[in-house]
Length: 286
Image (cartoon, rainbow, N blue to C red; front, side):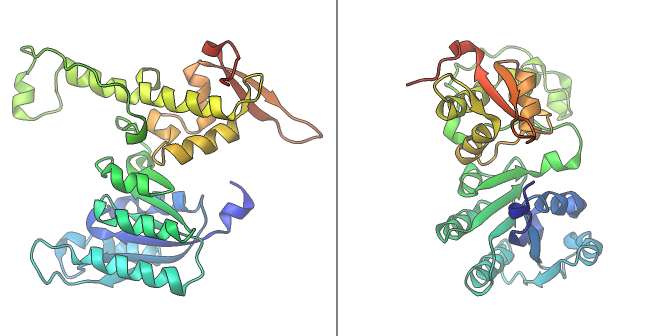
């Protein structure tokens, strides 16, 4: 993490109705990679029992609870409170960016509006988060990767969807476990999950990486990992090597085995990774 990024002042706004307090430690540690959380607020109706798990977490991390009563049943009034506060902070505080913690698509326009002013927007939510909100952020992190366990099936960016495939013919594959709603979802379902989480079988991921490499490559087909990573992040805000079980992009690149890799360094500087597509024969597109 570079020094400039670590000094960015960020506002962390949490939709407590759509976030889990158990992830607070990992969430704030992740946010610390991007800057300093100078504002930390969580929104919800704190008089309701379903938010009771947040109370200890709020005190431990100095997160300010913002009370918003539900005046109408079924309406999430805390969303409106978060949006109003965000706009106030946008114009009143000297911030470099916002971290919006929610899986709710209601914050799509807010994220877009903040970016229109030139500030950064980092989104954090579950994999069920609508693509519209994901795409509206500069970077989106799926909170499942923060739990430290095995990552769930990766969801490719809507901007780089693989070609549609014909649905498999239905067969008598539903087991008693399927009918009972347990984890045994049958061979086809398990294979589908494996394809999405295995980088070798994800055409959207491979397309994303090879196109970014092609655009960043020099005349000999070589491109620095940093340049490739920057293009990938711009095209797919929700890209994260951890979605595929790797800590860093460099680890994912090595695991794929599709690229020639060399390391270059000069004048005592740390070596940087460069890569070239093996399948293109080392020739970048014109």
